[in-house]
Every structure is written in structure tokens, then in C-alpha cells.
Image 1 (cartoon, each protein chain N blue to C red):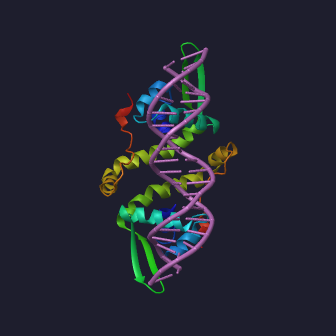
Image 2 (spheres, chains in turn yellow, brown, cyan, green):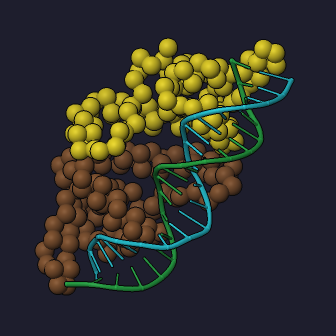
Image 3 (cartoon, rainbow over the protein chains, first blue to last red):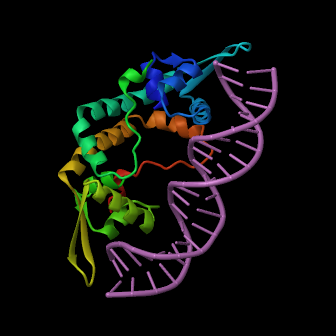
Length: 105
Length: 105
DNA sequence: CGGGATCCACTATGATACTG
DNA sequence: CAGTATCATAGTGGATCCCG
């Protein structure tokens, strides 16, 4: 979801905006995930200022490669909303919904 | 992985064969997952005999719908093995590998 | 063989508080 | 704002034993 949202936001975003774009995502999980993505080389972290903090996360070229199939999956989800609803109908626990495309601020 | 393997095995399989086709999958997890898939209507469970037990799991039409994007993902993985390796190179923990296609018995 | 039930070590994650 | 640290807790999955 972070990769997808980052892509949706044009390939890069500041942490605050990114988090607000994914309702339900805690600061902890976001930071943790971004660290992993950074470690694997999918995302790049740039610090522009210390005070006030100004950081920018952006997709690396490798990250863009991985965004591709993710986007395909999102598109598939849109095209098959009916199949997804068929699932949710039988679910007891509330499932994580697909982040709406309009969620991007 | 279960949906994918089930598809790989022709759309249906007995539990034993299915489990052997996915090395590392415990009986508990397989059964648990199959129950969920069954509950959501992606997989069908048919009991042919009680003694000795003879059960067959097969993809439902809805299940086949969900297998599509999964297959696309697997194909993507094959086409981008290089990108995947780039990831694993930076990983500390052993990651779950893509079930080899030949794994099907 | 298929699969249910238990026990249990580990992991994951939200909440909360703190720092520069 | 961006991020870290700590804690309490729910969830996860393997190991094991049992049944028909």
C-alpha cells in the first residue's frame, strides 16, 4: 500500500502526507515499513532540513519496478470489485479494504 | 500459494498431494487456509470416502477468478527474477521463495 | 489418510510518551 | 514534523497427540 500510494502521489512524498493518504496506517508501521523498503532499495530517503524536519521519500528505479505488478493488482481489484464483494460477504472479520484512489489527498 | 498450486495441479487435488507440492507448508496451515478459502467460496471440498479418507479440493468458479491475478504475479516474478534477487541480496532473514513450478510433484 | 485440539514460543502492532 | 523507545497484548504458526 505504501508503494502504491507513493506511486499515486507522483513517486515521492513527505512522511506526513504519505501517512494521511493511508488512513489507519500508524506512524510506527509506516516508519518501520519505509525502513524495510529503504533497506531493500525500493525507496529512497532524503533529508532536506533538520529543523523543522523536512524529509522526502521517493521510489527508486527498483521500487518503480515493483510498483508495476502492484498497480496491476489494484487495477484488477477495480475491474473485479464484484468478486471482492463476494468475498467480503462471507467474511466475519473486517478486512482491510483497498485504499481508495481518491485517498490521495 | 495454495490457490496457485491448486491451479497448477489442474484445478483440484487431494490434500496430501497438495501439501507435498508446497514444501514447508504444515498440515495445520494448509487445513486452516483451505477452510478459509472454502468459507469465502474460492475452493470446494468434496468428501468421496470416509475410510480410508478420500477428499478432493477444487477451485470454484470464483476461485478461478482469483487465481488469475495470482498467476500474473507469478509470471511477473519469473520475468523479473533479477529484481527479486536484488531484494534478497539485501535481506537478512530467509525470505519465502517462490514455489518452483516444478514443485508440482 | 485427513483433520481436529492443545500447548507454547514468538511475532506483530497499537498505544503512549519522549526528543530535537 | 519526523522519528525512536517501551510496553502490553492479540495474533501466528509449529509441534505434538488424538481420532475414525
